Image (cartoon, rainbow, N blue to C red; front, side):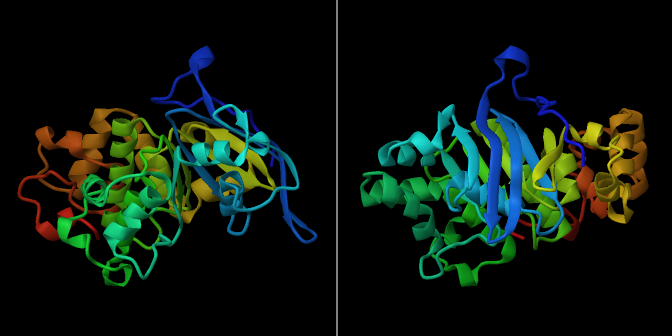
Length: 327
């Protein structure tokens, strides 16, 4: 696949000379035995953007995340975080950088022997000198921030639903008030409504907290709903990167199959209809939710239309259609 330049984000993040590169990867080479997973990969992540990262299964998306985090060694190349080459940092400087990011791993990676509250407090215990009372108060604030009820604090991971595990893991990732968030398949295993609610949560937190988000995902709806740019991994490199509207025009065979295939074509059609103006959005909304009024159209989310669910915020919509927290 032919690589395209690291274009600036389409929405929200700074552009032109003002944009700031939070993570810069150049010439990255990572391998296992005789197999190279990354081979000369270049990537820029800009402050304030949500960057989606996609690629074929086994292509190395999670490998890149773990390499940036320092969990996997690299064979060659440089990784700069906040303008600092991580290879040149002392242990103290490295810990300072690590406190500025939070990570939500693919399966949540909660400590099974700890309660939700104790899981959220784990980074605080490691990095901050806080009293037990203050730790409890801060952990409860993070719990509320991600939409979990207070009674979830005393539960163990085995007692949580899939959606609650994701939210508890996100609360832990936010424990130290990071400005950079890594998400590895955040909506995997969630039903369409639960996944849509999680997308909304990420988008709200990103705007409210000013987060920079790097999201590995296979979820097409997430890409359409919240990503400023999407990067495509192929043959060990970033093969294409840009707003989703640009990737839809790509001539690359894999990108075409991904976005225009059987699963992607419906999302693309809805995306183009929504992008064509409020008239088309109203037609699409009313086709799925008969009787919807003009005053409710502003709350319509793409994923809800695609899933056939009544958009949240519609008066009179049945509870089963609106969904519940933690699903």
